[in-house]
Length: 199
Image 1 (cartoon, rainbow, N blue to C red):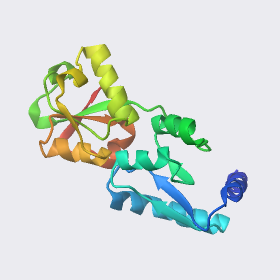
Image 2: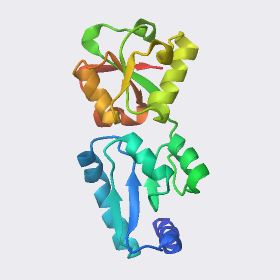
Image 3: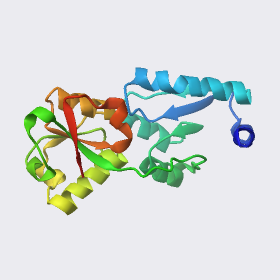
Image 4: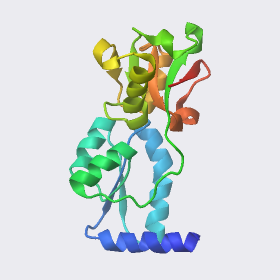
């Protein structure tokens, strides 16, 4: 199976090999340093396996990544499902690999604040990674409105903090009372002083 995947990856790289160096963009869900630490070994493996030169491109924020990917600035990119829909429509990006797990929106709060359920969040300050972060922003805002009648957009008590990691850090540092997040970032970013409320 590994060889079949490698064959298809090599065929893919041969089909897009129109530049001296292929640009591989990764949505910055964490700090640039963390993204580079995690993704550079993948880039090294792909270069060794395909013989292609590949440059890892990491923007400083999710909105910056969106500007680049929505204008076709990467040859290959790792992105959220929402980003993929827009990038496919605007620039013709095709999905080759996808995660089989369902994405779930969650809300992160500080344990010390005594918030036991989502209904207690009305009027609280929310942090989100970016306006179009699929599970962390769009899905959480939608579910808060539909299930709990909390209209984040109407209350205007929220701010965007540029990455998923910054949501967890911002809640821990009391920049916000709660943070919209994705279940995919639990083990990466969560601190012991935080708890998760399911949206």
